[in-house]
Image 1 (tube, rainbow, N blue to C red):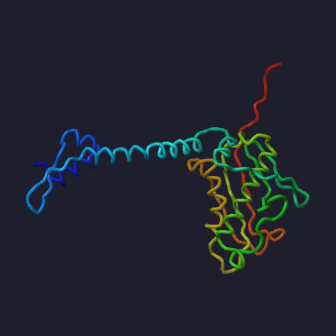
Image 2: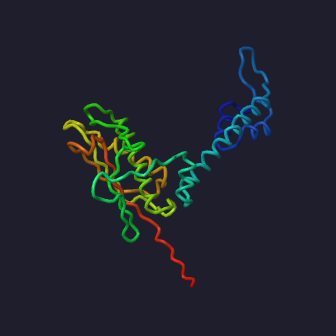
Image 3: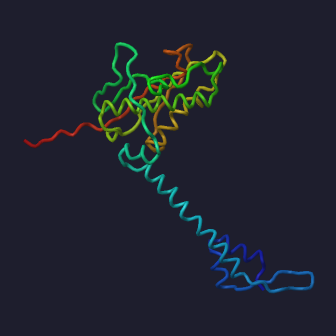
Length: 231
């Protein structure tokens, strides 16, 4: 007689339900009047079928992560993630939006602007929630990517985010700066992958230009231009 506990132990040791059924077509369970033989083939097949039905979804999720974390071009990664960049930002004063030096690309601080207008305005801890601050940081980060694309001509030259700085307009009592900045960090991790990593500085300020709640300041590492050696 094979006990129910012993049978269960074999299932958890790595054998599938069909393996158990193949070796033991029946097992006995105690009843009020004695013991009765219970056949399991149909139950086992149903359990196995349900397990197999989950495989395609698991494979799709794994394939999606592989697309994001492999060294494909950044443009294709944005497409995989369903991210559409806004129009690049324009300077508010006598400066340029971007400047590169060696293998680094420096960007002027970007605001949460959509269609040339501030999408979110206000102050954290006063009239904006942490969630709204996160969305503002995310929008500002998308504008940073748009500025990088305009400068480079091709986002595939972006290798990684080196440093992220997030300025947040807050009240004196506000203390959730880090969660707000995660609105930017989480976006960049999705795009560049968690293995790339980036350093970060976050701090609160009294006010920001045109009433913006956040400014995102980034430094990217870029691929150098490949010059042709042919004459």
